Length: 150
Image (cartoon, rainbow, N blue to C red; front, side):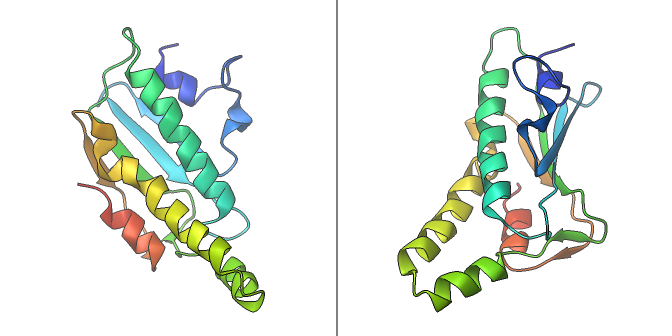
């Protein structure tokens, strides 16, 4: 098993349940890392999805910076939800935060959304190409995520 597959396959270092809202796959032939959003219960930007994306980016940095790590040319973002790329912000969360007048939490959520997709946008500051596989509806922040690729 190569180092990239450690992001995909269960191992003592990284169990399969590491990403509850994200599916990953490394393609040796094309040197491409695929990651598919799989948020539950709705295909929107949940805190859980943001946390998985942040952890994935941290894990990916450490794998590709490892001296014997695999070559990575492409970083491909997609969705595991048929017909939907991402519906954007978590409207249920918006409603709760607005009703409770929790301006600070709403700001933190918005900032977390930007901070989470920034590594994809800057291609992890590595010599690679970011791609979005857009199959289905992309609304609001979901469309912004799709546009973050080069």
